Length: 403
Image (cartoon, rainbow, N blue to C red; front, side, top):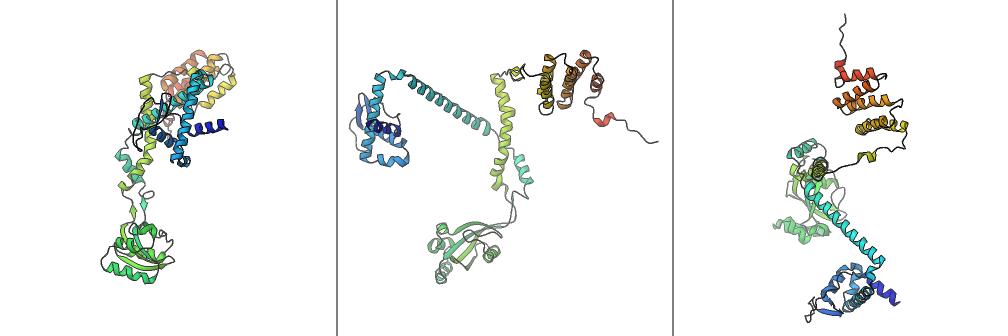
């Protein structure tokens, strides 16, 4: 049982606070540098106890915050330090398990450092560096005036609630005496959620339920008909007797730009940040630090047969034309005598021309077909492509005039 007790304490407590060599004496009850115990040359002070307390989860901490609990905590710390000293004296720092755990901890520290560096760099140099142009904000705002940023008429409403009709006399008397609506609400309103804020119920949209009251058609119509700061009521509901006043209003139409600017920026910024990251940051860092990629390592290996390689190239023509050209070239390199070698050469030129718009390289590829495969059925097509690629289709037809 002693073994279980000691290690239960070790699991609960952190291990980083003890081990200071500083020796301090004296001090008042509130002096956190006061020495509570020593273990050999190790000094355990009040501040170390406090640090240990802060590391204990809140639901366990209270049992250690009493004088008795702190003494128990001190005992745990002493036991831990004794075990550590004895383990070190036995040379257990060189134990394979200890070494492995330390290496793992160091690796986790490095990973945490890397994550913090990445997060800080991305925030400071990428996210914070992107400023959304005012023209983009205005354009997005104007495009959504009639949908996202359209608002129906609204009024901001405050109320005073009393529980009975007899209590309305006190409200009327206070208002007639010149007391503000807010002060009367604070003093007399029985509606706890709003009385402390002068009766403020927030904004109400026409034909929408009232906060705390639900559907109240008669009251809503009266609110939207009332002038600002007029007091209307009392109105009876299941809660009691209500007085209302309109403290502000918004007309039907688009919400003001400044009111929605932040939401527009939050909408536009992710795309702009991603573009800035991909188009500016990564190319600049690639150039600054030098990046080389062994592209051959990602090509199909020697075990891939000619039919599979040819089909893979065809599948890539539209989605990834650069890779398609690589695959066709690899096909010719590996299988120069294959029946489809001449077709692969033609498709290199076709991909460069029609999918990549690189007419210079395409012409060279078509010419290679003509030179290397003069008997190919694709020679005529290659010659036609050399003469006409890049020409608008409508220019290839001669318009005929009826006789």
